[in-house]
Length: 148
Image (cartoon, rainbow, N blue to C red):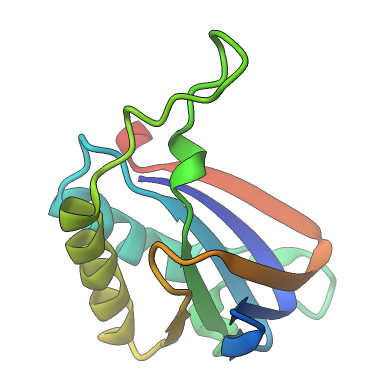
């Protein structure tokens, strides 16, 4: 699973002009599920994301985690993260997982994070979404569950 995480003061998702999810202080996670991903990848992200020390402490050093600040997380499926743009002019999405594989892995990720006491919101799988955010820092990281 390729994941882009952004530290945000707010983030929201709209579908068909209607807001479906919103968080305040926390993380926006854009998640690309690969056809090679397994439940182990989802569990790795669920364990890793809440404990990353990427939030500022009282000295403005990145020493606090999502759990420490009692922040929220917004999970947004984004298959384009798996797009291959290195040949030709049109992206290839051959590495992206089909919905019947991706949806259960995203659900597993969400449940595993909720079991840690986190507030987890999500976008709408397969929908044309408008994602809005205020990136604090800006702080943005890319995590690939295969590079553990």
